[in-house]
Amino acid sequence: MEEFLFHVVSRSADRVKGKLLAMGSLMNEINLKDFYIPNYILSIGSEGESVSHLPVCPVIAFINSKSGGQLGGELLIRYRALLNKSQVFDLGESRPDKVLHQLYRNLGMLKDNGDLLAAHIEKNLRLIVAGGDGTASWLLGVVSDMKLPHPPSIATVPLGTGNNLHFSFGWGKKNPGTDSQSVESFLSQVRSAREMKIDSWHILMRMRSPKEGSSDSIAALELPHCLHAFHQDNWHVFRGGFWNYFSIGMDAQVSYAFHSERKLHPENFKNQLTNQKAYLKIACKQGWFVSPLCHPTSRNIANLVTVKIMKREGIWEDLVIPSSIRSIICLNLPSFSGGLDPWGDPSKNKLRHRYLTPPYVDDGLIEIVGFRNAWHGLVLLAPNGHGTRLGQGRRQKGFSWSFIKVQLTMLL
Image 1 (cartoon, rainbow, N blue to C red):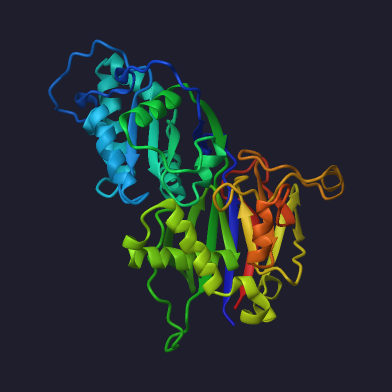
Image 2: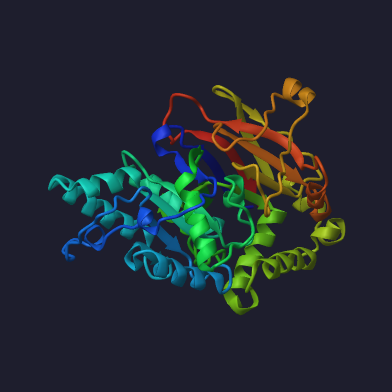
């Protein structure tokens, strides 16, 4: 048997919480100069410009040109046509960490030289990220890791399959239009949007290294941007952050297969509806609609995983997992799989006797939900439908982000 240790960690300090923008109201008129950043701010040494209009809402836009089929590329062209093309970046060509570090170095140098526009832009800067949940989480992680005194807020354009982060903050879950009017409408909403905080969580996974001469070698993995690998003593360690959810079991297996298939055949994943159909097809192919026939009970979560959560300050408790559960999802958002809410709205009885609360994005709690099979997941489509509420884990007050909040031990 192989041992895996999972630790989920809350970043409790307010200064490292992410800041997302909740969709604002649509303005009747829009002046594109309100969003404009001149070249000399973006690149030191560029020829100076005479700026007659103070940008009310200066923006930097990051667009995943590979997201949303052809939509990402079309949005990239449109944003560059409407704004200064140097303030719009293709994530396939420019990493956001390098772009933002350079931008803030420029702003610092210009401020030191008495540039009032640079100080204004640093104070009022907002970021736009166009892509799916992974792309949005990537940028949230970059901004969080920079530990800026006044981090910019982020508006999200839904270009992915699920778009759960976008939906949770009011930006919708359907792919947007790419014409000038649609983009100008979005910019108008970014300008009037209100700022909201979101909890960030770190996950630490440790896996024992194979003994010398063992045939149980570990294949090289292509990790997402938010996850990093290193070796410590006799352990392979994977560490990173997440903002929406992570899962173990059925959902994780389907998601991994979907990601692998999309990477091998990107031409088959051209739009949101096609992607959702492909996801459902994979779930059927893996047998999650007929789990008892395709998956032995020995592979149920209760036989593979032990979970400890902190329900009250400093007190760890074993989480009771029903024997029929085949998937565990740990949620930071009230949105999963394209806008569905697995936690739902607990009744007054549940609130009183099980100490459960409704889900919020900044409450320092993580909701843990279980599912028996794919049919159980379809219950979310019904009014008041929800998964099996297993419990809520909380952060420990007064400590920094390094404290453990949920611990999972998997024996395979």
